[in-house]
Length: 149
Image (cartoon, rainbow, N blue to C red; front, side):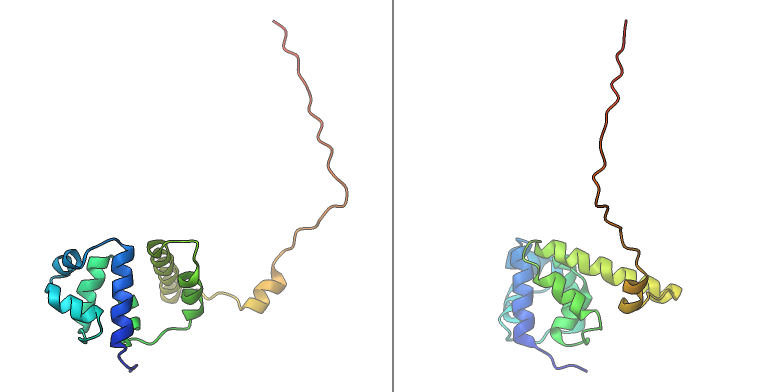
């Protein structure tokens, strides 16, 4: 099991809360925890249980898995490079990043259930059709039709 990163977890929760524009009191209420307890979690003074993290995730409208990984309850999976790339993109909002991660994860889970496997990157690149570039420009001729009444 991974080590619990309480300080990093608290900062992550605070960042998610601020991005969602939710006050500490609002999140505490929707998550069903006390305001002081949530404040202590955010400051890295308390180690929340998986159940509390699930309640906080619900209040933030993010996946509990994201908090479990931050807390060290779960290991980052092999798609962490994709997650890291999405989370590092400054051109999209935190909520958009989370939605993209959840969509990506759902596709992976669906493929795992159905047994679908994607080709390796080398094979996919080798078999991908390439568009041929034409050196001549197509002439665009418009036929004009005169309508007579």
